[in-house]
Amino acid sequence: MAEPRKIIIDTDPGQDDAAAIMLALGSPEELDVLGITTVAGNVPLSRTSRNARVVCELCGRPDVKVYEGAERPLLRQLITAEHVHGKTGLDGPVVDEPVMKVQDQHAVDFIIETILSHEAGTVTLCTLGALTNIALALQKAPDIAPRVRELVMMGGGFFEGGNITPAAEFNIYVDPDAAKIVFASGIPIVMMPLDVTHRVLTYKSRVEKIRAIGSRPAVAMAEMLEFFERFDIEKYGSDGGPLHDPTVIAYLLRPELFKGRDCNVEIETASELTVGMTVVDWWQVTGRKHNAKVMREVDDQGFFDLLTERLARL
Image 1 (cartoon, rainbow, N blue to C red):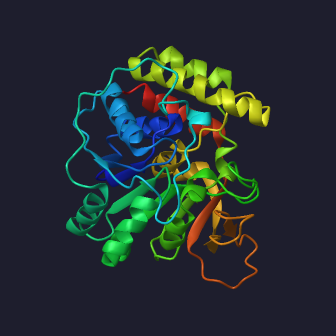
Image 2 (cartoon, rainbow, N blue to C red; image 1 turned 180 degrees about the vertical axis):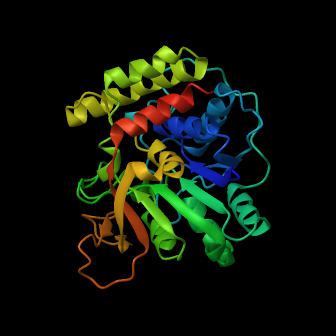
């Protein structure tokens, strides 16, 4: 058996972030979660760090270390998404307030220290929110970039456009300046855009399978998904909403569920109309150097089978 892959989860929970964290914690043979770092995004930082701890405790993993990071984007005002995730960011189930504490160390310092103290090419960054913490780490310690094994991110969109503006996906829109730094860093990037996440829909039958597991984490997840999807059902007119963030963890566990190609991706930071857009050179027309593997297709049933199986292990 190969050693579990060492990961840091950088997140702004969010119900779909919670599903991603649960998927990782339900896969200890494959994934070693070195720590969870939180960033402001779906909701402000105090809530995202609370929510990360709520999820760890729901999973019976109060030993997982949670570090607080940036409370605002690099250069812009914070935009949040309570209209999607509810006031707490984890609306849906009734959960206990977390007992576990946030670590004293700042998330950015934890990221730098962890990458530098592990063998080069062994730590993978899993980013589920705005890229502020990663950009700050790169600015503070540029020597971490060549040591990162891979950065697998949920963010952007191309053929599907955006979900917060016509051109921009929320995670990139919140901090496009940070995204620009990350995409220029030379770290190997795998990008899960809306093109993929809009195909993994929480059909009622899929949520029912999760609820039927009957454990506390699974029932809480079913209740979160029901709350979360009400917004998307209204918006997209679909049965169920897209489950964005767990695609990042699913890729580490089952890369064969996804198909994509190496592209150049540039981030728009100036245009009023398209700020936060991920400009993906899918057809290779610019001659610019590839800097990301952009996913476009997913075996959505395979994805939900994996998620359900791992939630059952918690």
